[in-house]
Image (tube, rainbow, N blue to C red; front, side, top):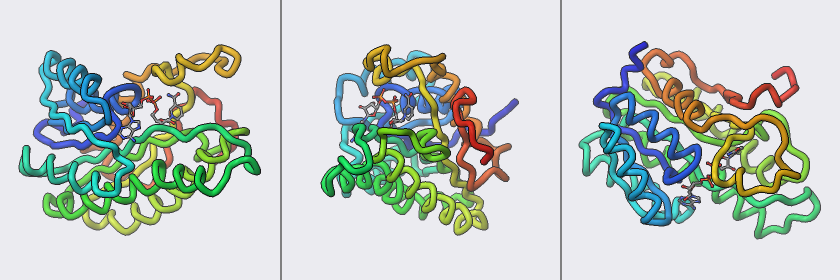
Length: 243
Ligand code: NAD
């Protein structure tokens, strides 16, 4: 299947490792030029090298995506380098664990900043450029906690549910402009972060980040143009609710 991504330009945040990196690699494999960001230069350079060696095009910007000025800067970097922007994959590191009554105001604010506001700012900065091209794909990498709150992860459950409400609204607002907005909701995948957790806290099979990246690439594709406002689980059937 031709995903129609050749010649497109994609911005993927928090993409030097894990699910963000896998998404950038999958988009690049489909012919999109990718602009990636993360805080550490070394892992970023390694990702750019891997994409380039595989025949793709990638540019890295070292930046902390939770800095309110960064989304605008990343969009400017993508448009400055490639002259357009078509795809945004918004990703950020996950919040720490915490039971509902144990998290203080600062922890809640930090989670909202990282896992809700970063996406809102990125989309706000990117949309004028997507509208200019009459086409756009926005995917936010979240968690299966969007579809079923996870005990002990109150910060993730809170910030990501808020993002889901916002993204659903944005999807309706932007569809007439040819722009789709979706969430991708991973269950456990074999990333560095998860592999660093003890086996006591991780049980059951782990998803392959490369497959996750291909799901993101499909949602960002030409044929997925009528798929918008969806929170797509990529969770190995671990979410047991009906919706
Ligand atoms: P990871 O730790 O393997 O990779 C995170 C990436 O984000 C790295 O490249 C890191 O440098 C970058 N990053 C982190 N904070 C950043 C910041 N402030 N600014 C710029 N870059 C930043 O993590 P992962 O497992 O790929 O998870 C990605 C997202 O998916 C997280 O929000 C995580 O909570 C969520 N998630 C992951 C899983 C899983 O099983 N891997 C499951 C559910 C949800």
